[in-house]
Amino acid sequence: MGAARLSFMRMKDVGFWKLCGSGTGEGFTPRPNTAVWAILATWPDEETARRNCRETPVYRRWRAHASEDWTVFMSPTSARGAWSGVEPFQAEPDASPGPIAALTRATVKPSVLAKFWGRVPDIQNVIGDDPNVAFKIGIGEVPWLHQVTFSIWPDQASMDAFARKSGPHARAIRAVREEGWFKEELYARFRVLGDAGQWGGHSPLDRLERTAA
Image 1 (cartoon, helix red, strand yellow):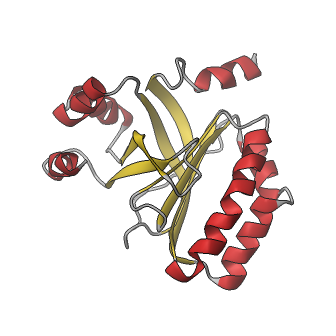
Image 2 (image 1 turned 90 degrees about the horizontal axis):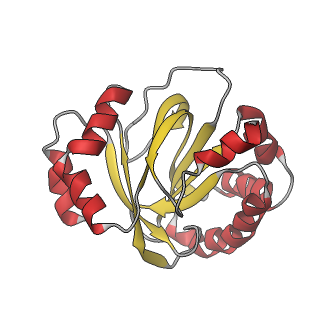
């Protein structure tokens, strides 16, 4: 991971980037999982993104050490908030039908760590039970303090329905607003353009294609 930072610092096409670890299971736990890692990077366009993810040495090294890898290519449609003090995504509204992805990122205040992680298992169970979610994972830059959630949905309506549903997720959102749990937060949505590789032996996007059929 440390060596990868040097590679990204020297990469001419990349914009904003972050290297993240994950938690155990699907990532929504405070216990790190040393077997699953994530790269988030922004690029000028999809062609540049695909070429760099396919050809640059750092991505090739990671793939050579991995038993499996999966890359999702996306275009931001909305974004608010900041990540490390910057606004990383240049969003362009797009109401086209098709799968969408949601990313939330927060720096959790140390004083509320116990409250935050006490809510996470219930939220994980709720999103896991939702029949519409095609993929979900929790990742982060620093264990416990910096948390990123990423999920993919068949369309805007299904994701909005989950967000509005009463339950642990809605209660956690209210607590964030009313009690000020986060020092910094970012919410972004993306149109899913395509993918490469596999997760669990197949592409998670295949599930969306079967559902649409």
